[in-house]
Structure formats: structure tokens, C-alpha cells
Image (cartoon, rainbow, N blue to C red; front, side, top):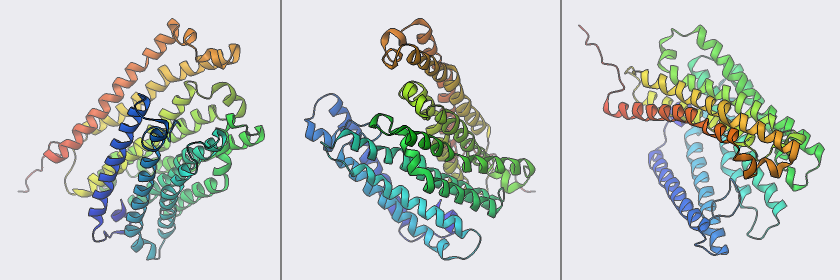
Length: 404
């Protein structure tokens, strides 16, 4: 995306990107191998901490792999700065967005360092504080600013959003996060002895973080309807649709389902039940999954701009991924989570997670109801892979009519 922003690609950038990709493979394969060995009790406690499984959700990879990932993020930030420098030096209405993009990139690279602040024997309450810096500030905060800024810039370049609106949405996102993001982290710290008033403020500010991206997406959707016939917009139709779905899932997954489990009284009864993966699945894939697919399609479209795509597979993939994700949430995760909540309020949190309750016939049926949504989602993923492979083989391009 860098060259699309700055219209310049520095010398050696390709080599840097390839090294970054190899580093990613090394960290993924190494950490997963260490985690598997640790879970199967093949490693001692000390070796497990450094090369296996630290024992903490979301930051489970061993410390060596954690440091390697941090180094990889710094390399990614270096590559981002190199490609953004020409755009940062240019005056104009897009400069504010580029500055925000650079700041968000720096935050993504640096704030993962919060996960390195504890040791093997640090007290659990201290680890939980810093762990949620990674999960909330890093993933739910700075990534949110980054996503909003990237999409705002892309919509601005396509003429779907006015530069002022794009800059305002990105700036609003950054302001809300920087003024309330740290407070928003507090809604995660229920079991670390955090005061109720801090949890209450945390839930409010956490929910507010999704507002700018939602507003930006729906503003772009209105402009898309008005300019549907523009050839430039039509060429980027499906990337735009995936970006608009990011705004939709940000509202539903991060906003509605997230806020449902955020307030203090809800946290007490609902945290860790199926209401949590309901929020997690809808927000993680709905926002960052759809964003990743949209950015991938933008890059693929820019690589070969002159040829028209056959969009049948893309259309099927878009609606299958979104429909499957929605069915997964509505048919299974939401009803299971709400019934667990009822059991937690009536009998206690222990009962809501017990085999006596989870193995009842109705709960078994509701868990199996994930299959239809998962299947539709899977078919959408296969269609996307087939489409991308077809860009290499030529099957995903429309036949060019010869000019007489």
C-alpha cells in the first residue's frame, strides 16, 4: 500500500518485504512448534517460557519468539517509514492522513513491546495489566486508528469521501483513542481487582473507539451509490465493498457485541462465556479479516490495472464470508452465550461453564448450529482462493474483445 500513498517505491523495498515475510514464517512455525511441545509437557517450565508457551491467552508464544516478533514489527515500521517519507514531505490536503498513518504505524510497532514487560515469575495482576495493553491498546486501539486511516486515504483517492471528511474521521479516531484508549483498557481488568468506576469508564471509552470507522464506511457507501457508474469506482467495486463491510462489522462485532459484555455487571456474569467469542469472531474477522482481504484486492487490482475482472467468484465470496459469519453468530454463538448468561445469573458462573449445563440436548443442538454458517463461510474462503489463483492463470479476467 505504501507506493499507492506516496507514489514512490524506495530502492531495496522488495528485498525488505521478502525478508519480513520469511521472518513471519519463522516466528509462526517456531512459536506454534514450541507451543505444541509445551502443551504436551515436552519442555521444562523455564524452556517453555522462553521457547514454548507462556501460559497467557493472546500472548502465549514463548519469550524468544515474542522478541523475534517485536523485531519483525520494527522492520515493518522501518519499511513503512521509507515508503511514506516522500508523502510526508509533500504539502497538501492529504498530509494530515499520511502523518496519522505514520503515527499509527509507529504505535503498532512499538506498543507490542508492552508484552515484554513481565518475567517468568511476575505477579499475575501485573501480567494481566500489561497483557491487556497488548490486547486492547495494540489490537483494539492503534490497529483501529491504522485501519481507519488506510481506508480513509483509499476512499479519498477514489473520490468517495471528501479529503476533509477523511481527515476528520481519522483524526477523530486518533483523538478518541489517545484520550480514552488507556481508560478503555480497564474494562478488561475485572478479575485484577480494578474498581467498579474504572470498569464503567473503561466500557464506555472502549465502545466509543468504533465510531469513526463506522461513520466513514457509511459515508462512503452513500457516495458509492451516487457514483456507481464511474469507471474508476467500478474497477475497485469489490475492495470498496469489503471496506464497507469492515465498517459494518466494526459496528456489530466490536460495537454491539463488544459493548454487550463490557459494563461491570455484564463482565461479572458474561466474561469468558460464548458471548466473548461472539464479540471476538465478529470483530476480529469482520474488521481485520475483511480489511486484509480489501487491501489484498486493492494491491492485486493496482498490479494489473488495465484488465477487467470476472467478479462472479468475488461476489459469491463476499456474500458467503459475510453471510456465514453472521449465521455463525446468530444461530449458535449468540443463543449459546445468552443461555449461559441466564445460567450464570440463576445458578452461578461455574454452572454456566459446567459439563452438566453445556452437554444438555438444547446446548448440544445450538453448538451444532454453527455448522451451516461455518460451511457457508468456508465456501466463501475457497471461492476467494480460486479467484486469486485465477488472476495468475488468467481465468479470473474477462476476455478482451479485439479492436476492429
